[in-house]
Image (cartoon, rainbow, N blue to C red):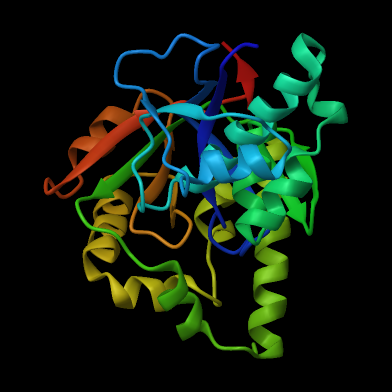
Length: 275
């Protein structure tokens, strides 16, 4: 048995509501208590911890420990990463070092537990992913850019914000988001940064969520005014993610409101892996 490392994620990416995700270089490590050496700052998971619940759901026996650096409740996919870590740990317990993402049930089980696939798929596969139900495909990323995540010191409720969206969407808004999601995927695949600011526009969820957290809207505006190529509300927030020209990430991060943590992060291209 070997411990598992799983990256943080940013979901939705503007118009890609519940359909797009991206993995970033903040990590949740999961290992088996009594088998894998627990690292400094690691702790045995409580029975209700998402990693332990997922571990047992995937057939794992015993308890897991978790060492986490992903901000919790901030829209960076902590629960999805922890669940993928628990599932992969269970599969490795059963299969040993023969574990492979190609034969793993982690995406299916993770989607069932998470409720949607965008976060768990990006954590499992790395890079940028497009998802529907429990299917996911990696999107080629041909942009050489910096990524910045701005995370304030408060949390937002996913359930509350989803409840505000409503159960029906105007046809014009649905068409707008479909087109902009396609444009965003094409921009990353083709390496065309010139359309990013337009491609991340959304008419379904972001304005509602920004209305619940005006500080996030202020950070979005500050980063764009400082020259970011584009920005989106990460998941349901409150983190705001920015794409910046290569080498410009630190400057843009420094322009953001100071009552939060701004990090320059890398796009994680590995996804879940053993340590």
